[in-house]
Every structure is written in structure tokens, then in C-alpha cells.
Image 1 (cartoon, rainbow over the protein chains, first blue to last red):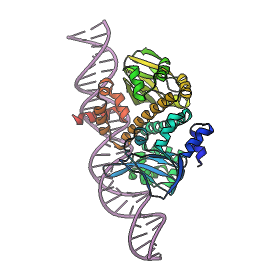
Image 2 (image 1 turned 180 degrees about the vertical axis):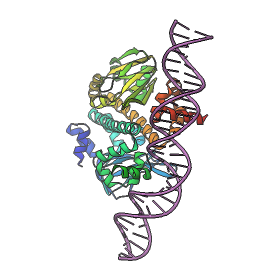
Image 3 (image 1 turned 180 degrees about the horizontal axis):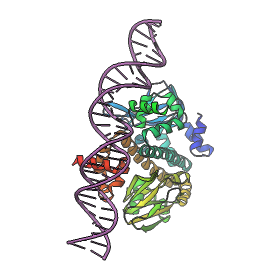
Image 4 (image 1 turned 90 degrees about the vertical axis):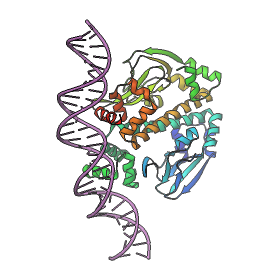
Length: 187
Length: 187
DNA sequence: GAAACCATTTAACAAATGATAAAAAGTAGC
DNA sequence: GCTACTTTTTATCATTTGTTAAATGGTTTC
């Protein structure tokens, strides 16, 4: 997914403002398995996924629990770092070779203070993330594991094809054994 | 909780910007039981709670599921309306007589375009809501019902004193019967 | 293509939660 | 203080999910 598209999709910007953001962005590549964000670290960049897929997970006791997937066009943000300059609670791992757009947080913060359009772009950026977060929260609270799996299957079929079931199970809030049972029933 | 405190706590503003926001705010009162937001309606205001407590709930089949509580100092927002001008999925009910600060969304949107400080204030406002949402999401996914109850008890003891257990149970994602069992064990 | 490795499913039993109903405790009005 | 009403707890049984382990299926490597 192309950078202009990603920026415009959040909030339309005058050319000058858009260029200011684009000048702060560099393209990078990392191989499958690369750890992009590390738990207990203050992250200084946010990313947009040009190509590939990633997951965020945290540890509960000894086992990893995946709570986010991102694919082409999605932002990758350690929210605690981005918002409060605090250590994040998550690792972000690349599940495929990835091409990324990297944006240094401090550059973006400076632009927020200078340019009202960019400040509003940043506002809309977080607003959309909040809508996604609320929708997931409500899905977790309202729907059974079976329903949540069906929704994922319907809305993000590519995730299920590209990601191992162990990660999907923990994303759905159940064990892999449970997910297997659900899959067996649905067929 | 006082209005200046609420505004400042989100993001420090120059006096002129702060006054612009304050001029758009009016104080209102509603009695216990009042429905502040109605499901399937585009809400045109957001509120801050000066005094009182409220809950947001949606229907799953026939039963109400509470997914949010707000008390003194908290914002009350129908996010779908606020962000996308779309119908909300929730009712918001006042659980006590409430005093509220009301802010018309369209006035705020206009200020966002005019004033870079206010745009950044709006950005921080949503950022903090996002952090809260993520924390709740992760609690739901990572912790058992017992742990979630213990956390609520620790972080928001007043909620448990002021709100009926049926609402708290659905907030925790369990039945009231389950919550009773948990409470019996913890003692 | 056999061996080694990883991902997924199945099986068996334990624990947690849901559903329904009834009992107990608490509150409000007269 | 009695009655009516609401909220909370307990009890019983069915269902779902977790845990552990083994079996199956797929991939990779040599």
C-alpha cells in the first residue's frame, strides 16, 4: 500500500503539510521474525505497513498473548510510548518479510505544534484507532469465542490464511485447543 | 469536578483557546435514570461529568451489557457519533442525579480547524481515551473474571459501592451469578 | 524419500461459567 | 413494623473452556 494513500485516508492535507510529513518518513525493510518493538522499551517511531503482516503480543506468566494484527496499510504504534512517552507492554513481531514506512515520533510531535492541519491529521489518526479498539472491546465482551472467530473469518480472511492458529487463538482469547474445536464444529 | 481542571488535565491551553472552549460549554442537570445518549442516534454533544455516575450499555439479544462506567471528571462520548457522525450503538444512562458540562460537537469541530492548540487538545483528549480502551481490552483478554473484579475493586472502589452488581457483572463480561460466586470466594 | 521438526487436531478429564429457579437480604412506602 | 419490591446470594445441572498428552498432518533438510 502506497504512502500517499495511507496519509490521505486518515485526513486530507494541503500539499505543503503532506510533504512535511512525507519528509519525516523513511522506508525500511525487515525480515520475517524481526522484533520491531520490544516490551518495556520507550519506542521512538511509529510505522505504516507497506507490505507484510505483524502481530503485537504481551506475556501473561510464560505464554504470549497476541492482541493485535496489522497488515498492509495499518499503522504500528506502541500507544504507551506514542501518547505518554512511557515503556510499552508489548512486543511487535513481523510474521512475514515486511516493507515499512517509519516515522519518528519526535518529528511528528514537532509538526503537531506548528501546523494545524497536521494536528488535525494526528487527531483523526488516533480517533480511528480508538474506534477500532472500541469495536474489538465490544466484540470481546459481547460475543462468544465462536462468534468472534466467525467475524474474523468474515472481515479478515487473509489473517487466518497468513497467521498460525496459535496466534489467532490467543487473539480470540481462547486456547488453541478451543479454537480447534470451534473450527471442527463450523465445518 | 471543576471545568478548568478537566480541560487543563487533558492538555494545557493558552487562555484565549481555553476560553473559546469554555464559551461553547453549558452546564446541565439530569435526574437519576435519565437516558443521555440513545442507541441508533447520531449524538451531537459530548459531556464531562461534574457530579454523578453513568454507564453505557448495548443490547445483545434481549439483555443489556454494560461496557463503560463514568464518574466525576470523565468524558461521556458516543465515539461513533463523535468521530464519524454515525449512529451510536449504545445507550448512556445516568445512575445518579448528575451535573454535566455539555459541549456541542459541531462547535468543537469548528474550533479544531481554527486553533492549533485546540486541535492538539482534541488530539490528546482522544489519545487518553485510546489508552483507557487498550488497557481495558488487554484486561479482558489477559485476565480471568476474578482478576478483573479484583482490579476494579482496587482501582475504582467507588464504582462497586455506587453501582448495582448486575451492571458490574456484565461490565466484567460474566453473569451476575458468576460474580456472586467470585465475591463469595474472595472474602 | 526418510528423518526431524513444527503446526494442528483429537481425546480425556478437571475447572469455570452459564441458565434457571429458589432463597435470603436489603430497601422503600404506608 | 408489615408488605411489596428489588437486589444479591445459593443451589443444581448443563455447557463451555482449560489442561495435558498423544496422534495426525505438513514442511523442510539432507
